[in-house]
Image (cartoon, rainbow over all chains, first blue to last red; front, top):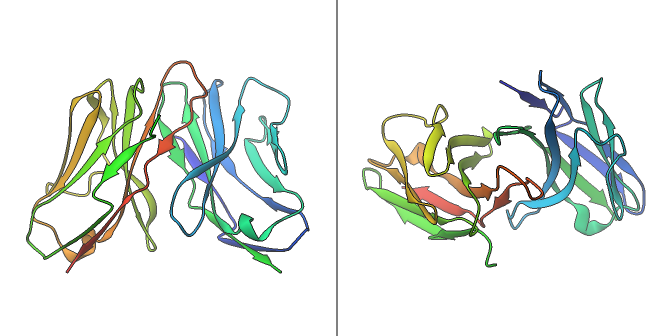
Length: 113
Length: 115
């Protein structure tokens, strides 16, 4: 089975600074999808960004971008110009071609004013 | 679309009682997932349906847990009898296996407290 590893249980960043959350995964598939989800204190799981494995270009959504290294099986999330509203738990997720999902254990991000 | 709908949003029950959690996936989605989230164990996949058929139920903790998906627009997760260690937030999520953006859409969760 595929595994997703988030090695940073907690991270903190100063407001307006940049932070990078790491994620690695293990798979033998060549076709898959990767996601970052955000879970604020409200508990709602919100999609932050997605990356298709067949695309070499790194996905970007406003202040959020990824560094996708397919050979290294690495998928890190960079948050630029951090805002207080970015404080949340962040989950990395892998979706297989067959539609199964695997989530990491999450990284709790604190934004310091 | 209203998104994934879960009910109830909060449930408080006593040990030994039967609990039924309900989920309505997004119309057109053909995959449905039930997760449990606790501080100690994080986000755990309980069961995964594809086209109403259970594909992977290896995450179901024990026989006290059961899940059904009688049609494409409704699923239930039942705990009978409930125990205090079942207290958690239970999420339902749906996705489209082929086409679309492929991500999971989560419901708001049901917070279960077993006294």
